[in-house]
Amino acid sequence: MATANFTTPIQWILPVVFAFISIVLVSLIKEPARQKIMALMIAGAGAAYLSGGGFGLWEMAFNVLMSVIAYYGLRSYRFIGTGWLLHTGWDILHQLYGNPILPFSPTSSLGCAIYDPVIAAWFFAGAPSLWTLLRGKRRPQLA
Image 1 (cartoon, rainbow, N blue to C red):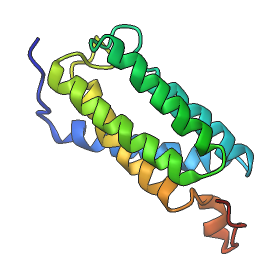
Image 2 (cartoon, helix red, strand yellow):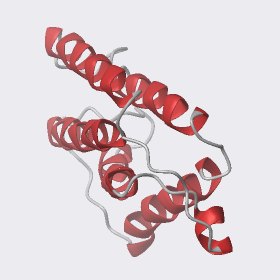
Image 3 (spheres, helix red, strand yellow):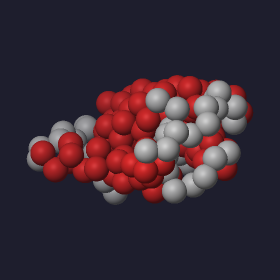
Image 4 (spheres, one colour):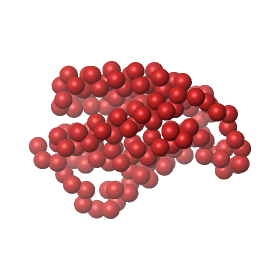
């Protein structure tokens, strides 16, 4: 199956915009719930391609890996960031293989591959609440 190419700038910009919107919304969740919820999200992201991603048993192996990453993400945002970077690679492989995350949207895996590293960078920064930063308050450091 042939892969579709990004042909318009909006297809490159929208995933970044959605990533920033996600960061703003997740910033509304207070700690430690934010970290726990985001660890669950990365576990779910690992299962995103299970219903027909095209890589057979490798899809299951990737899901197991992401579940382990999510478990450690309960205590460390660095693991959550690592999980999003792993998911970026998985998105790229699916885009190249021609089996996107959303079958009705040929460039959905590539859009996801643009979105994921943006939020990964936020997790590597410790996932600070943007609202707290705007008010000038420091948040307690978590692992």
